[in-house]
Image (cartoon, rainbow, N blue to C red; front, top):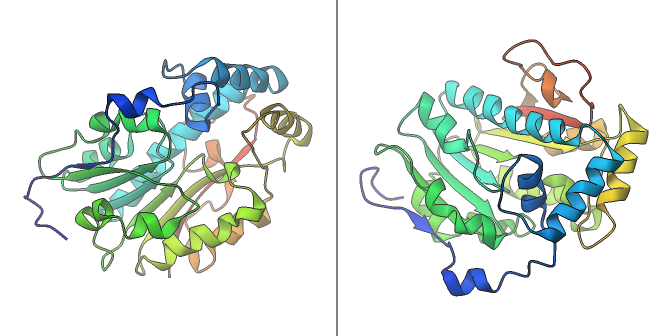
Length: 278
């Protein structure tokens, strides 16, 4: 790994020609999520899926915001435990409270590698690479389903030291990985690469609490090329094999160490959890 004061950043961000090749007729989860959060980096195909989901499950927008709020609380908690390295997989389009902003507010020397497979997200890499002078950020284009391509990427190896604890952040992403693509095996490859004392933070949609609403959401979302899978608490727990769960364990996103009173009327449609590697 490079010296902490040497120049970076590393970025796989595309040039104008690369962006011109984006197929805007095909929706992408990051752009659907961007629409729910009030962003502008989405297209008609994304908005069609997003609106269908909203019609099927009122409250999905609030759920997306709660998911984002969980990200901030989880990253802050992990940074407060002394972890100063983060691997954020399935980054999404930048908005307020990005991982590096939260982590570097705790420790200005924190290092972050962002990973996503959507060219639109990559177009915003420069925003993600504006960290503190003491810290480092990098952005790489890769797919969660191919862990080796992420773990051996030059950008990852320049920024992260795998002999020291790392916070692996996979928020709002795993529900888009089908069972046949073995999301548990993919996560295990990432966590196997980290040392004891590392952390894993994830969120995952579930129909455990409100099966009709979350079933309707999945049905609305799964009408085209995108796929979304609700998973049970037991299935979510499998991601944390070899980890000690941080209190309060696997709970709805909004109930994981909230900063204040939990809002009433929220659709309980997603688990949030943080674990520490034993």
